[in-house]
Amino acid sequence: MTLPARFFCAPMAELTTPALRETIKSFGGEVVLCSEMLSAAAIVARSKHNEPLILKRDFEEPFVYQIVGTDAAVMADAARMLQERGCWSVDINMGCSAPDIAKTGAGARLLSDPGRAREIVRACRAAVSVKLSVKMRAGYDSSDPVRLVEFARMLESEGVDHLTLHPRHGRLGFRRKADWKLVALLKESLGIPVIGNGDITSPEGAVARLGETGCDAVMIGREAVKSPWIFMLCAELLDGLAREHVIPVRDIFIDVLGRLRDSLPPHLHKSRGHRFAFYYSKNAYFSHELFTRIRREAGIDGMIARVTDYYDAHPDEATIVICPARVREDGDAL
Figure 1 (cartoon, rainbow, N blue to C red):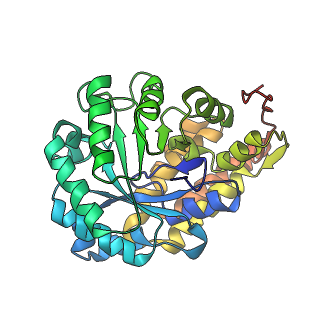
Figure 2 (cartoon, rainbow, N blue to C red; figure 1 turned 90 degrees about the vertical axis):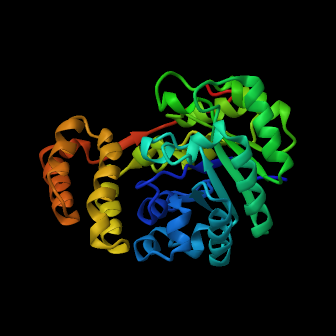
């Protein structure tokens, strides 16, 4: 199997909204887009709250839906329902370490329950004909290489088409440095494509990880929220280009917030607006001040007003100029 792109945008709860995905896609570059992490139970229950979260537009192909849960039958039904909406792949979440997910036995907690994990994958594989993948951590409470390879080979034997590894164990959250040697180990140990994920903050870092580990693709999460243009820069770097870009960071901020307002119901505006702003505000010099003001606003229009106020006071920050590094002939970034 060959993956459709060398770069993936990670599925992130409250972050990979249709608004952000549209902005990422507008910059071009090879990228596979993903939904937010979706509750399988809510999908099967046809929750009205869930409907805007599973919105997918035709231009988003190839597209991945990610589901989370512990009941194999419910996970399989959700996968089948999402397949009917049209997607390239359904991804099973075995990586989320948030306490409210882990306490149910879902997400990264499944890594300590191989029997249940196998049951879920087997049921989902029988339910869908599209690609089936798993995004996982290196373990739940430790990163044991032997157990990691054993678990991943079990997933491969059950029909998973590709794996994404975030090389930290679940209890670490985002603490310590991601151990990309574990990504290289999985790539050497499996016959299916392996995607690496974790601590990518630049196109140079993404391209370097491809070369260092031999992985088939790199998945970018939080940095893609702060810098939705990163996939464009990654593609140019791989092609050996070093174009200068003037990025209208102020306009992008306002555009994404506006798209959130227009594409999601009002009860989701505060959570999605604040989560996006938390990361994207880091492009501002006085980022803490800007985000503090945004966080006081419950509505999108108020958030846009605070963004406008900030850049009116700091017009020199409205755009940034980026000239990424070139790639040497041996594949390393200069």
